[in-house]
Length: 411
Image (cartoon, rainbow, N blue to C red; front, side, top):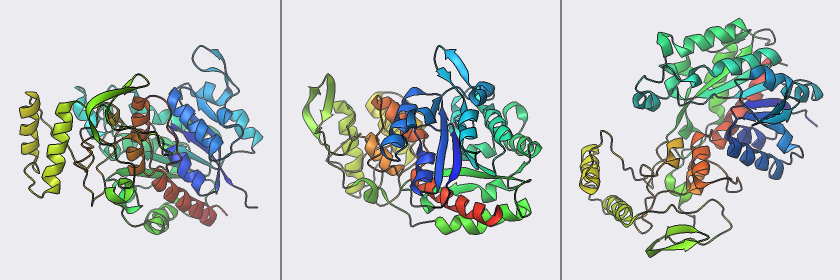
């Protein structure tokens, strides 16, 4: 039996990244760290029920990673996080770790976030969560790490200092090298890996210079230019991803089921998390108008200006950005963001007869989650989890490429 590669997943969310790694059957997850409660519940449930981790609820640490010393060595009687032995003990029991994976919350690096924030996110504590990630890397000295994040990382400069430069220098001081051309090498289009969604991500591979058996720069060049591209797959469309799901049609009048109001048909099915949002008559009419416009080929609302004017006509409010976006059957979806928990206006289902925004399950499929991946908590929790996640299909490709890389350069 081949010994599995031991990993720790930091900033794990609901587990999109670790799920892709688990799908390869090449990795063993020793610990996942996440501070929000519902993602922890979802992740532990998945590890236990899908991946047969008997100790799943001990493997998932709900904790604030900024308290890195406590995370590593353990903590007692915390009013929020209880008591834990820490991840050091877990790693010791399992003979060390090989790889650290994860990515700090991306809102502080995202261009959209910087536009919305009056100070360009310069004061956001999340800019420096990579320092907590770095401390864990430094403590355990794994063979390699995967640091996943948004493209905005390339241009983020809180306090006038480039985040990329800070990260590169900080990891170098701890004995790790990353590619010196992140834009060219590490900016990856998820559609090339079979994810039915326009989503670009930074995938930063860091290598332990003291353990690798090749010049790190040569090995990194090999990873990005030859190894990782092997695991690409054909692009997928919205139609391929969600068209077979049960249809949810608007009702003449809303109904209440278990104290929850529904504007659309809802029948519990074997597919979980496929529950329609409650929409007003006005919104249903808008969705029907926009989807019918596309289906008929008239395309009266194809331009940004037309959509802005429509929004004004409907709401009486002006917006600098267009609020509506209909998914196209024959293309990948636009990016699924965490913002989806607030409203789904930029993710309108393409079928005029359904006249609604997408469900959590549809968002999950567009993120490449399997149907047996169950999201817990409120619908807001679920949408946020899906939007924050790494697409598991993309994560699987990273995991396969990383395995090949480790076998080649750490033999």
